[in-house]
Length: 307
Ligand code: GLN
Image (cartoon, rainbow, N blue to C red; front, side, top):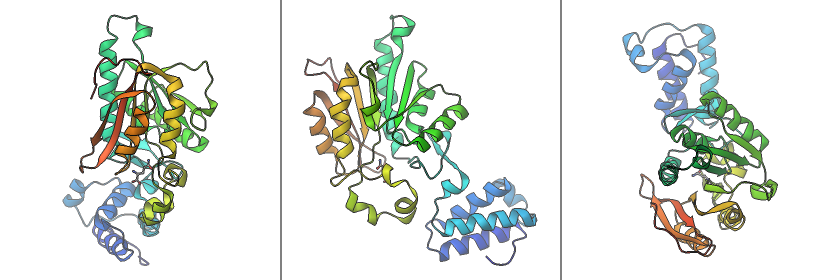
């Protein structure tokens, strides 16, 4: 990649080779994305005129993108964007890049919110609002997608990182969604007067500390470690969110977690031992356990399942 690139075709070819040599998976796909990112030219118009010249300035910008990607900087940190639930999210190095697996969690949450909204039909407008809390919100992708899809919901996103919340806030503005944001170490900054929630949702850090070294470079070196590290057994945040979260849940409220593979049994048991009923584990598109959810009954009798 030392010589200058002058046509789109050269850009794709040389970019792909450079990324392949650096051991980047999906080298051709990433070269495409980056070329499209700097030129604004998609595949369809590329094939119309593959030998179209690009300016030296654009070529240099593209080479710089390829150079960064060779260092295993994730594509999304270079382009600043990741699509999630069909919505574009701004991302940077302060937030976990939204994963497709997490869409399974959002789909379940949307079902839960819609069900709650249906139950609330006939109540006044204020009483009908379904209150959603997204704990460890990061880019805000979970909360904002739910609020986009559920007009009956209002929500708050919480994160320990101010830098992450700046990203979440920016995403709320870009998507024109009104949400509240709070910087707090889990529930520590919550007041006793805090409202109780109908739905609490979280994709907390859940990778056991010792497993982090085995993750691919893009994740290990560039996703924020505090968004990954779930403590020695990976369950630290589930324990704290379940133990403290019950004080902020309405009876009949729903708690939904993203879980890592193999954590379904442990997380379900934790929920069951803290007053949750109808605890279910749902698999993602790859067939791995991905979501644990249950209804908070506070020990009282529960009115039926929801998933
Ligand atoms: N699912 C993410 C990964 O595989 C981790 C997300 C998390 O810890 N919450 O890297």
